Length: 496
Image 1 (cartoon, rainbow, N blue to C red):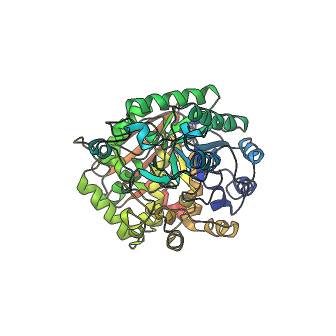
Image 2: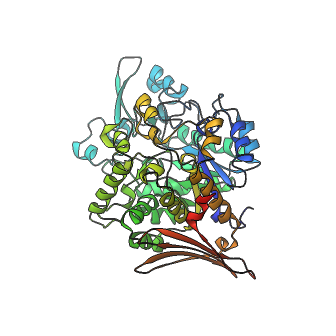
Image 3: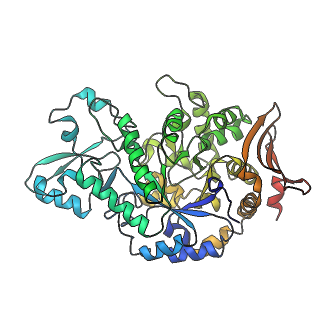
């Protein structure tokens, strides 16, 4: 069944080729067969050329094209006819290998695309102050500028927030606006209903500021969201940052990520203490997408303090959390995190969620149950759905930290993973959750010395998840209107 209330959907988030082993049509077949009955929608991670670029599709050479190895726009439209589709809109940058940027390198200011790209001098002038440069908020340890040579021999410092192959766009320029409009038009033509505004927090740069989440950034996000809404699409804003920032953003857009949830769920299970999680769910935006894992790492900054303002967890609690993840993964997460790996920011831990919980099936199922009982659209990452372990071999081949949690599955490997008791149990839990009408209603929660309970009620339908904190045993309790109450020990789903 599909919920009458769209805010309580369950979506899959996946790369097309890394889950299906092939094309858009292969993924559609997988959703109709092995994954049938699990999801209301699917977030397709970047399918633009090249899907095997430096940043797994987040460095598109042509954002209005589908990588031919995956299929074409007709295939996207066909999938959108069966599933609600979300696509990424990469608003901050495009590939240095794109035809537009290559033309800029060749023609310099004579190129029609010169205004499309940001240089350091466009923001700071030819002699930027050290103070202004140091004020920039950095997601990575590298410089945010890359010196690149034009054909005439001049060296230009282009703005590259993420990598040297991702050239930042001037979104206020005429070609910048035309570029974004062309992406929106292509999405609309092929049935995309949700767009994820990737790296939107970095889109506006202004001298003398952090160049991150400025008042002008909020205005840009609001304007782009309104433009998308006029075309029949909802926008999800993707920003890692202080939790109060997420609350503020949520008031100005359709959807935000609940990136604070993953560290808070881990903290709850590691410390057998749900106070921080309950506090967050008391104040968290309701127009959110919940995640435990994504194609990026487990965010730490999202639960941390900021400029003297308290975080959802204290620094010692976060330090203990990170160290516990490293221990649980037998140190493999350490190989992929922070300065130990390329193309990684310093504010996340790269690790599969299954490994973060030491591959403990019952604890993993409790974590997923918490996510499924939280308000919002629930997104389950393909690696999380299949309880994937850290892919150290892939990490060692690519030296990209986040690849440890971006495994490749062939159809045979998918079928194999679907037979694991924890995956079977998770699929049963998802199907049960989708059958309960209580989730179309109101959320509440209670915390006592011994237990934590998440509740839903819609008319005479009820559903609860009760967790005994001392030993992390969990019970599902639900009642359809006019029918007897039912109870199920969560661990019994693992029994077959």
